[in-house]
Length: 86
Image (cartoon, rainbow, N blue to C red; front, side, top):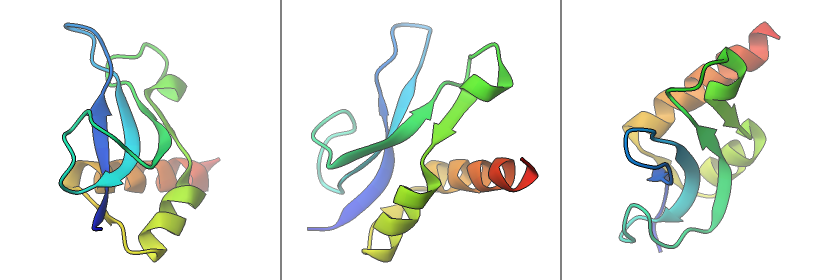
């Protein structure tokens, strides 16, 4: 069972909101997942509402062998930078 950290879309039309989830690599984008790590709302008004991510849990899943997708990897980098700046 290969796991990936990926985005699952849950927003409405023209208002995308994504969940950052850990799921099986072969499952559909919005299909089953193991755990929700956070949310990404690219159209949010406040900068603090754009990305909410549990970096500790993401690091745990990476240590267990989960591979982040390119987009989720860049979001993890942004979340780590925001945590370091605070």
